[in-house]
Image (cartoon, rainbow, N blue to C red; front, side, top):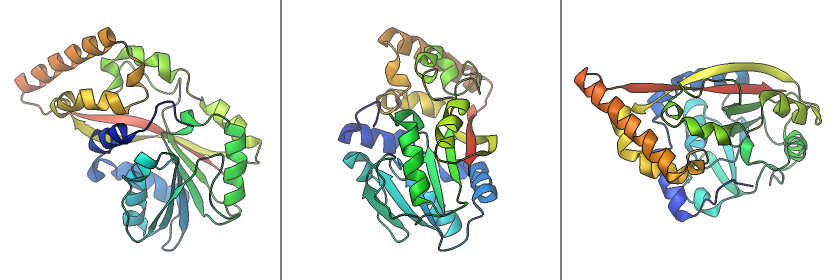
Length: 253
């Protein structure tokens, strides 16, 4: 399913540097609230749950029951074990859930790992109750200027990889085969980190990120040097250089 192998080392790196601090996700909380209309006791399938960042957030924010489905054993081992979160092995094409058992599906930065979007859409349709939404958090090709988006603006060659991701149109076409229609599409900001903090973690970040793994060593070092200069400029300006990123929320019903 994955474009990279999520072994123990990669999963640990992902947990350490890819999870966004909860206070940087406030806009996502409100966007999910608008489109999911959550209430305590609802069940959401977190498909491709990774290390459980959103599984934990959804339970904390809305008192939901989350079924975190993740194909990588190493990534599953990082998901918090606590009330409200059930962790299961599986992937989007073979969900270990009964028919009509979920009130919503959450897919965060993972549709580019799905080899057969049509098959996945049919499987997601099977496990959702009638009218339940699919919420997809994703960077879609053509929807953002990656030359100015953090952190990709420092590594412009990453477009070689991101341009191969499913577009909004391709995603909607695939889900339409299972009867889903596009309900909403909106960009959502998230506050990530300071430039200096990202520079300190960028080597580990590269090991855990599908996009940055596609860079050559020369391209990575060039981007890292640009990032280093930006850190110096922020320090000279007495500015922390905190960065906000934008991703899309695509809602299907």
